[in-house]
Length: 370
Image (cartoon, rainbow, N blue to C red; front, side, top):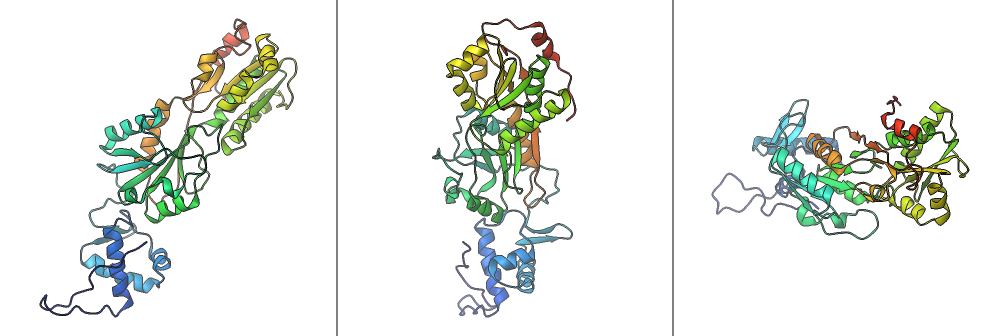
């Protein structure tokens, strides 16, 4: 993990003299740390002395002496109240953005719309580059998706969760630990942060649940139900938003569908399952069932099928994700950006039905603080 220096410390004597043996622990630690810094194992800011002591198996006093030597050589800078930094690096509270650096997106394809937009915004804002790894198999995002050849030059990791309403998005702890050890900033895009140490830029799922449920209740639905294919923090957020609307309008959230019932489909898989259910679609087209949905990020299926939906464009999400990455600093308090979407009213009561007066009027729903 950390390499020893290739050559030990030299005495103040001619170059032909035999090198001095590193007899003191702080001298050996100093060379280990020098090699780690040159290898890119530490970012612009080094961990605290106690953390370094645990990493190298020494006490804080030994760490302090090693850091003092490296600072005297000009390799490090110690800033009062801020910490220890690699020389010429920016302070965490510096207003200037990161420039000319490389950001990495594990297990994603740069040709996907969201990644293209992220790359465009990063290039425009800071002249930096976004690279992606090979497509990954299903399962948690793992350390294998972040190649070792990329780790030393990665300034930040974007972890894209485009289908988080239909498929679980998990990140292996070894990947998180490696990024934290290297002081690499991390931002989850499209999904909620499962770890309290992660930044995230995602759809405002609570707002989605509230707006969709409010729309159905204002149409006159006697109850509203939700259908999804997975249980996750994102789907729970949609349900919480719907419950808030239920408390405001006095319309219950029900498990069973009946006459004058409203249904919210959460995720593209739930929408696809509904469209293949002959009985459900017949009730919808007959005006007995009011249906709306929130699909996975960037999915055009609701528009193609003419179904009312809460939609957030990747063009809305990408600039905020890029901004969050530029502002993120290792060791700082994680931030979650919630990007609101739009309620696109199409056919809530079925494609064969014209929009009712109340449905058309609900295009301009009043916004209610949650």
